[in-house]
Amino acid sequence: MSFKIVIALFISALFWGQPALCQPPKVAIASAHPLATAAGFEIINKGGNVFDAAVAVSAALAVVEPSGSGLGGGGYWLLHRAKDGLETFIDAREKAPLAAQQNMYLDKDGKVIAKLSLDGALAAAIPGMPAGLVHLAEHYGQLPLATSLAPAIRYAKTGFAIGNRHLKQLKFRADLLKQYPESARIFLSEGQLPKAFSILRQPDLAHTLSEIARSGHAGFYGGDIAEQLLESVKLAGGIWTAADLEAYQAVERKPIKGQYHDLKITSAAPSSSGGIVLVEALNILSGYDLQKTDGITRKHLITEAMRRAYHDRSLYLGDADFINIPVNRLLDAEYAAGLRRSIALGHATPSSQLSGDNSPQKEGTNTTHFSIIDDQGNRVAATLSINFPFGSGFVAKGTGVLLNDEMDDFASSPGVMNGYGLVGGAANAIAPGKRMLSSMTPTFIETDQQVAVLGTPGGSRIISMVLLAALDFADGNGPDSWVRLPRYHHQFMPDVLEYELGALTDAERQALGAKGHTLKPARYPYGDMQAVMLDKRQHSLAAASDKRGEGLAVVGH
Image (cartoon, rainbow, N blue to C red):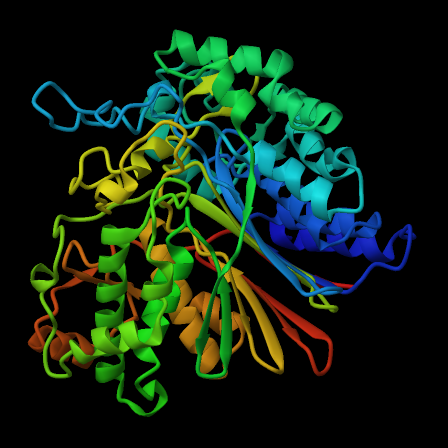
């Protein structure tokens, strides 16, 4: 019997094997790990709403998927509350320390010092995840925070069996983890990779989660946990201060809104570029009838829309608390029409011909996502990250908290690629207290009859994956189709059309190459999309988890 089947049976027992505190709503949850999905249903069964479940799933992922997210990272939660139609976007993206400087990762000649913004304590920004969990529970949940955190605390304390995906990511960063005693002690076995399905226990992390459960925001950003974080970071060469932790707050922002034919799009706001780039690309494509175009023309047009939207990302987007972003212009239909007129059907536009900085771009791929919806339409799309697999590789002693390396998502030097190939300019330059730009794209798509909730990890390729899924929804397909679509991607720079196996036929590759596109096969399948859908006519739910990952999608009632 597979691990997923065991978890699915466990979830069933939560509903049918024991009496619930009250009749739970019908809910669909798709997350990147079966135990996280189980945590969400455990909280629903205790009388929680989808927002309580989102706290539980987020915290559980921080424990069972440490390569993708954690208390030492940050993230975004996109919410819709059915009773009053409220839609909001919780921004718990990490912030640069107050001692950060624009040139902190450059040598005396102004060149980027390799891996300084990726590895170790100096690469870590101030975490936002704990503040986001507390904010979500206090403002939108109906259960005590301690109740919603209980599954994650249990997973950390008693342990769980690690799978092949965990081991693959661990192998990628093992040499880095070996450099830090706490990291090696927790994640390695006497300095070596642990065996598959061995038990990972994290008692220090359980203690930190318990402090948050007991004291909320102050349980992480103050008291003993804060002191341990600061002491460890300082000894390891980092620049965090008590003022950094005390000042951190999650903030709510107005989501980005758009329309593509009969689809209403609600998505991530800056400090994420996801919503703006997604809607801009859809605005460009709205001038075509993609359902009536042949496959070659369709893929050419989508690629050219990606090129132009990602180009604007590199020019204009960053932390809206620090810069003025021309949001209205970027989302304007007439602006999109102008970009559309620059697309030639017969040939690709070289990215070097677009204005502005034409250096290659970058961003971390090891993120996580989950989607939740109930039969009333309450919903959450959440994308969480610590950037590279296992973040900075550094665990603060006594806390179990693995720190992010999100400082790499800033433009260390304008025009220079980060670890994921994305470039940025002055809009995303390092500044004290600033949130770094992200591509995370938690998204709702709604018609008169259906509501979709979706998102994925994948760094710079997140937006293009959500774009392809949105177009697939427009074609009349459901979650199973969105998550399994073969993917292709263009991000302006490098000027390359990257594609998964099966995404382009031989004829399409030949024809697109003849149009001037430079094609590059992806080295491996990418993304781990988690999607759920509500049929508003029948109040029926559907859910799907990307087979590229090890997640689990369940509809329960």
